[in-house]
Length: 282
Image 1: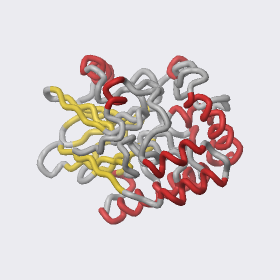
Image 2: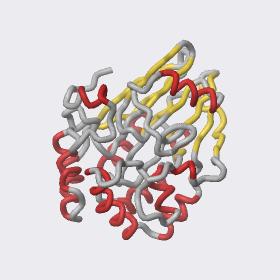
Image 3: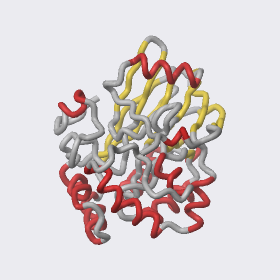
Image 4: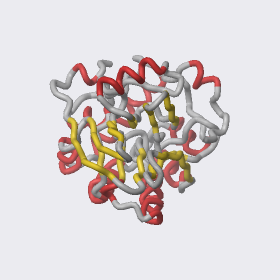
């Protein structure tokens, strides 16, 4: 598969100004309605308004309710960028653009869930995807931030905790940013080097391969400078898995919702593969 930024003539960057107070960041809803509804309830309980909520893309994905998820995100009115899935769907492409190796298990499974999503999404949902920017910029606690899906140059580029800092620093420099929020890789992590940060909130639509059914997001707090915390939550994963099976979506991914273990580690570097099943703690 091609890296999607080779197809995009101009990267659309939306500046959302200065954010203050608590900010909630999450990614990878993956058509998981039950996880999204729990995320919305958490945001409401925390008193965080939609203008202080950011999604790193891939609203649509492996699970069973893409149309309902898109409509809820749209109505919520949060800040959201296009992930590779949204870009592919809105352009009418034949695959998800996740940059899986051809004929890998992930690639084979994508031939089930991606056509399903295409078949059930409304014209209204696709039109909304056309309005999503590729990146967001904002100021927070005196620092300049960028929100990307994969990296600054490749929407389907993988940046992991184990990715060398030099690679992360390259993208921070390209973005002229003090911090970057990235998504795509599905695993939460944060790294600080001198006065720069790479932050990945994780995803809410699938567990983080740590043997638990928890899913992840991040909170920013500017009460005493630039502060961030990783948070997880449980949700009704049994219903989400049952919906996947009812729609004949990949059984291996439905099982992942129930076990907290990925079907395979094909996309992962050796360092992340080695800690599969180890409970994440921050």
